[in-house]
Image 1 (cartoon, rainbow, N blue to C red):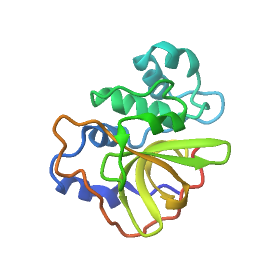
Image 2 (cartoon, one colour):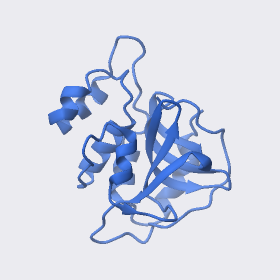
Image 3 (cartoon, rainbow, N blue to C red):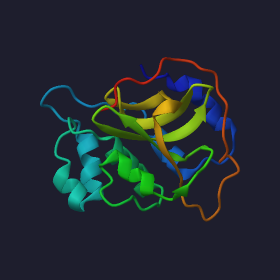
Image 4 (cartoon, rainbow, N blue to C red):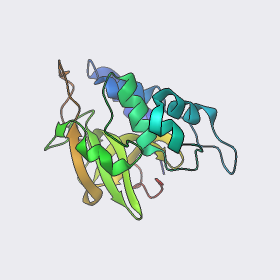
Amino acid sequence: MPITSKNYVWLDTVGTLPRVVTEARKLVGVLEKPGAVNNPTILGWADELGGKVEDVFTADSIPWCGLFMAIVAKRAGKTPPVDPLWALNWGKFGEPAGQPALGDVLTFIRPGGGHVALYVGEDSDAYHVIGGNQSDQVCFDRFGKDRLKAARRTPYMNKPESVKPYVLAAKGGLSTKED
């Protein structure tokens, strides 16, 4: 179950945020449409990215966490990896992060594939992330640390001081729906 955005208002107090986090927050609340209907906003992201992404992503029923990450990266002035719709390809983005920090790209293992989202903090058991296609929407959620595949640092010309780990309260359950 996604965690309410009000639990993350503290992000407004840490100074300059990484641009990827700023861009991701603008999209919180975008929902996938049920059934055969598609959300034109999500399909518009594929059009904005163009090329192979636009050719492959034709319905919001297709897993779209990688699409969300690609549009966030593009709008933040970053170049997505090759084939960004495949979540685990984000494990090649930027540089290895070591200890994750605010704005880092995290990839996770899930049954049948992977998931990608942005680090906003952590508690003892989970990473708190903002991502797309989490319960069919853009939202904040918690992912078990045991599911982490890779943590990648966004390339910075001037890294904001806010790019550091944040220890948060363990509010909300762990993500179980991100396909």
